[in-house]
Length: 604
Image (tube, rainbow, N blue to C red; front, side, top):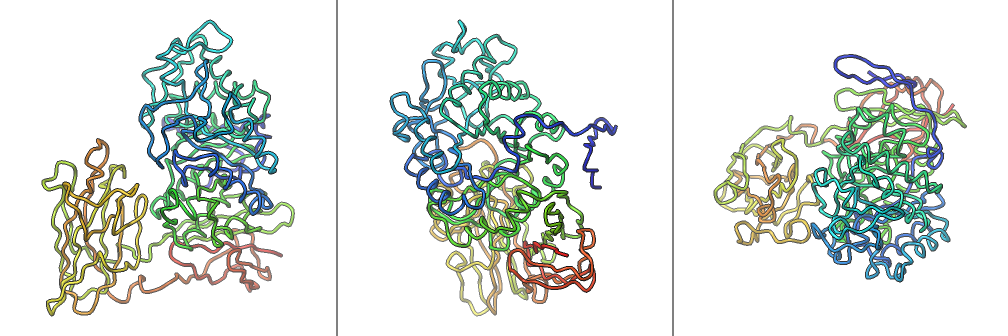
């Protein structure tokens, strides 16, 4: 069911409660369209330097600014001098702060901030480029400021007087929460945003805030008040997700954007999940407030160590879905190494119009893996339709299970299990690792010595072969390394013939003529063993026979564009390919790639 555009229906305790959409607030005017920008996390983790930041800003100013891109955001750890190694930072690291317990940039990474300048000089430089400056901020008060009993600016109170030591971040140990029932709590947040505003900051992403939202709601309100007191139009982004749907109305009246999922990375399963979330959150999109599907992990990622895992078709799907759902578009890839394909995605004029200016955006079709959204151009009266094929080309439902391994976790003897499968009569093999349904954290799955035995006695080492298709839960599949360039090892022994594939993962290989059997040792890589969360996987082997949909490149179908405003005689233009045709009726034939889409402009 699609909820009426002018109301919000919340199911609570078995009752349907109708609530009016919130009125426009002053801060909504600060983001009249979904923000377009860049965030440093996907590219640099916690180690971003001023030099790297400026290199990215230069590219944004030269290549993306003409298309509306404007926010350049520094993510976490700009105040941590020892956070210089990619995505790693100390659990309770050294923090740079002033005498009032307010975080300030560390000069070893941001030299222009020295001598009390803070981010003011860098912000002015960004503004001269015609762009806007943003930073990341953790919820709360620094633990070090609490331990040192630093004073709160403008009061006789100390940081220790407001610390909430119970509600703390589970993945970053730098901060305590702020107990908003304590005197001085609002004054502390006021002082933080007074400093940020004095630097000329235009955008703040506050982390560890929107999950769990009900628990953190008092701090959301405090931050809203603190920003408003500065009189500076600072766009507020709440992170991480998933924000609780029952808190949607509160989010729309306190923030400009809020995350609807946990960190989104470049895996198809993660992208597919966003279809459900964006549909669920669609009715909460409005002027100045936007559900945020998270950053775009496109182009060069992870300190230049890899390219996005998404295929070109999946990237078209990503950009089309985020745009027609009016999510903020925040690039995560390294703009200093911007490739031509990624640039073409970010500078497509029609796509930018859909994201920035279209109205009446909504899903209108969802059946058997085909999903469609529509929107309208209020100026030209053109209609848009995005038709997505979420089917897997290598759909495991069309394959046969050849081997189901037992669950592997940290207590499994030898850290893994042997896997055997008869592959006679199959043309392709799928090596699958599931996360067993408990999430993907530290599910560092490894196939050791994956081999195919042929009928005439020869053995083929799959770790030395090129896969047909791969999808992983995080990072990328590799023959040589685990995440963060760590080695492939099991119980300290190098896996010289292995394939790392973070669960949930699927790796497809073509089978040669005469293939008889498959064997491997499925294991947890040593990188998962020292951790306490996750680390639970289950290996499967599937076989495909010739003649299925895996042998086709697209799904051909007749599709009714009538609900998207199409009529016979209209002209349809494919936004990505440029193909144009006249409609003989409101129904047309579409060829849609697996995991791909057709983004269509329908003109009278």
